[in-house]
Amino acid sequence: MQLTAYSLQLTAQPKATLLTAYRKHLKMQETPLKVDYKTDTGKRRAHNEDSIIVDYRKGIFLLADGMGGHQAGEVASRMAVEVAYDHLLATLGSKNTDADIFKVLASSLFKADRSIKISSTEDNFTFMGMGTTLVIALVRGDSAYLCHAGDSRAYLLRQHVMKQLTKDQTWGEYLVEEKHVAREKIPPQSWHVLTQAVGVTHKIRPELKKVKLKAGDILLLCSDGLTDMLTDEEIKKIVWRYKNSGFDETAMYLVKAANHKGGRDNISVVLVKYKLAEVEFECTTCRSSPRDTRKIRGLSKKGKAKK
Image (cartoon, rainbow, N blue to C red; front, top):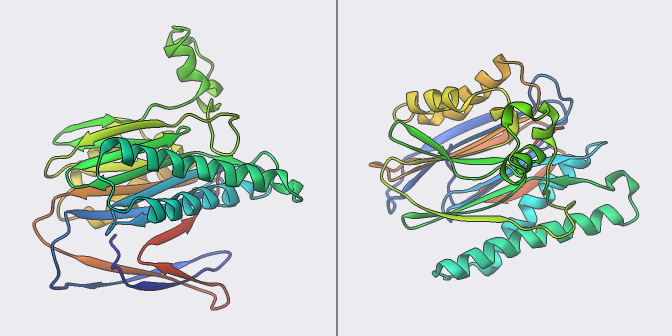
């Protein structure tokens, strides 16, 4: 889906939300990006502890997968994406060098990390120990800049090849990379124990990466609710099948496939397609109860529940 730069009104309902969309073709400068996204509670979880922010006009995309009891994960993930996004808006400006951009991306993650730690150690014991993964993608010109901590992933699909751009920061990966333990000998639960998480790790060290984009490339950000249910090959086949005429429904089909396989966790997906031949803008409004109303500045904020 895509969003205009105009203000959008979003209302939320505790049990269910109804997404309604209307599309406008506008005579404006062509955007090089097309975006589709979806977040879903899945089949097993009572709450959605994932959060995403999509701002395609500024090329900023964030996805977080929270953890912690009593909905603390939802608080952590929402805080992470909102604090990091606000910091990016305030500090990115016209910074163009790779070093400056990486510095801003890292500082946005550090700021989110500090905010969660402060909130989890203050009066409310309910939120003690809460944390979240966080993956940030910034598209500038023909380059994508990534900053991440945890096991939410970023992929690049180019032609028929899909490559994982981020490295899972889990105990399992640590044993493989640092201790040279064979993957088949690692206990399954080790792949779900994070070695880094925003708001939890004492001194967090985000992974930073730059990727040059080509026409037709698709960036995919996702939580492990997708990758635990679907193999990379299954994900690639779905994205490739709908990469053109059906792109606006790709995220929906990915979530549907993960739920069909069991949907054990919350599932969040953000897809960013680079270089389009035509311009298409879509406004999305979440409607339900009129009581809970928030203003969103030309972007989409969605809360999810998890682990």
